[in-house]
Every structure is written in structure tokens, then in C-alpha cells.
Length: 353
Image 1 (cartoon, rainbow, N blue to C red):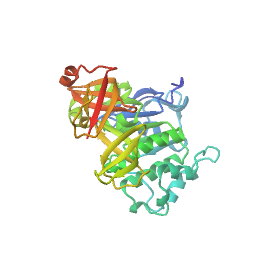
Image 2 (image 1 turned 180 degrees about the horizontal axis):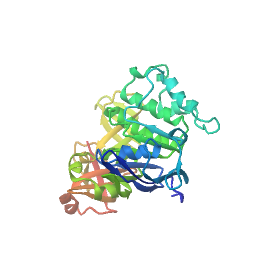
Image 3 (image 1 turned 60 degrees about the horizontal axis):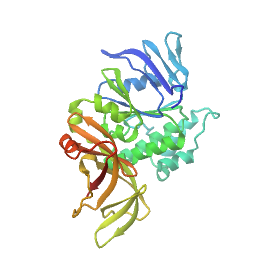
Image 4 (image 1 turned 60 degrees about the vertical axis):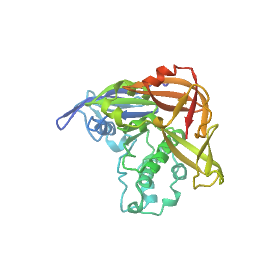
């Protein structure tokens, strides 16, 4: 982990009757700001972006002050080199997709602009949309273009305010995977706001948990959220495994499709896609069965050996992290944990239909 924080925030501000006082230093390149609606997540992003001025405090990006009330420093929003993506995309309705994308790059100084239009188009897979108008785009397409426009402004930091909240499930799965690909491709730090537990656990390497305008915990997502998340949320929020798969072949006789994920091969019900095509699947942790001996005589076709690498307690729920070549989450109950004597390092079998 790098020694200089990517982002430092220590501010106090009143937003209406709400008191906001976020205080944190971020070193991780992909962080999530997590908490219930109304806790101050969006206002914190606006503080960082310069859209809200604090009554007192400071914001630093890569060691350079963006705001410091003590030293009377306030860099205006357009000069902060921060990209901001909102839930609704906020594309310019009178501009085509291509014009929306290039608008951001026109606002950047040429010497600072290091992302090429074609590279962004390729990573986001939006080449077929370039001549379309925003009103003709789906929710997922709109967010892809909004992310592309923000990237082409050459930001030193990308802030994302629940950009997938209004996107349908298939598009959301694809975009979550692409966000990780964006980070890998362009190495731009990301702070992602969400109140969705599954999203945070799938994409973030670090989480800031916010309640009532303050950061109450931070660290690795599973450790932090296991201890601090509200019980009502935990009772209803599904914990999911998001995977990118590649179609290997179809078996017309059995009506199944063989897919590859890393070194693993899964058997799924027949998918109407061509061999070689990449797709995304979402496996709820509660749909996976654990066994301590290899089961026989099951209808389930996917039985893989693995090893327990971590166990997390979420109130009455237990999440076991199992390494089968990729690390996946399995949800069990406390009685199963003790009854099967499951512990870290134990060999288990991962079973799903």
C-alpha cells in the first residue's frame, strides 16, 4: 500500500439541518462509501468534488490541497480534476453519444489528457452507440456513456454516486465487472457510493461505513460490514457472487451449456449464446451447498473441491469464503458451521445446481 494517501478528507458542514463531518484517509485504489440512505454519502462526494464548501476543514488529493479553510484554499470544481458520475447519468440531451464523450476531453488541458477516445470506447463497449442520442439509450447504456465522459476528462479521481441503482440486473452485472476492468485499464482511483451490500462486497477492496454523517468504520469489506451493518439491512440484503464466464460448448442432448470461469468449468442450463462469448452470472451465496465429503448421487452437476479461507458472522447469518481457484461466498447457518466442524483451512466441497 502506498505511503501517501490518495485522498484525505476532514471536513465539517451543515447541509440543511444535517451535520456532516467525514474524516478519513484513503490508500486503496477502489473504495466504497457505504451506508443507509440519508447518512451523508452523496454530500461527502459533493464536498470532495467542490460542489459543497465546508464550514471548516480540508480535502487533499494525492497530497495536494483542494480545500483548506485554515489556509483559505479552495480549488473550484472544474479545476479539481475529479470525475463525477451520478445515478441518472446526466448526459447532455442535445448532444450525440460521441459528442457527450468528447465534451469532457475538450474541457481538459491537452498536456493532462492521457486517455484516448478509442481506448475508452473499447473498454466500455460503446462503439455501436456513438451516433445515438441520449433519449434512445437504455439505463445501462446511459451509464456506460456517462462513465466514458468522466474518464475522458482525465480525472485524478473518479467519484461514482450509486450509478447502477436504476439499471436492470443483467446490465448491472456487466457494468460491475466493467468497473473493475476500467480500474485495471486506466489505473484511476475510484470512490463508489452505494447502500447495496452485494455491490460493495463484489467490487471494493476497501470500504468506509458511514452513519449519521460520520465514518464509523473502515477496512476490508467483509470484516467491516460483518461488524457494523444494520441488522434490518442484513436480514434482507442478498450476498452474491459476481462472475464473468466464457461459453465453452453446448450439449444439445442434455440441454446444458459448459462455461469456463478461470480454471473452473461449470455446467449451466442451456444458454442461447455462441461458444467463446463472455457473459456475467450472479450466484447468490444462499444457493450454494457446502459438504465436508464429496457427495454422490446428486442431481447437482457442479461439485468442486475447495478450502475455507475465511468465516464471517453477520448477525445470525454466517458467510464462508471458499477458494475453488476463485474465492466465492457461501451462506450457511450457525448450526451447519458447528455441525460440520467447518473452520479456516478445512477442505470442503462446493455444490450448486
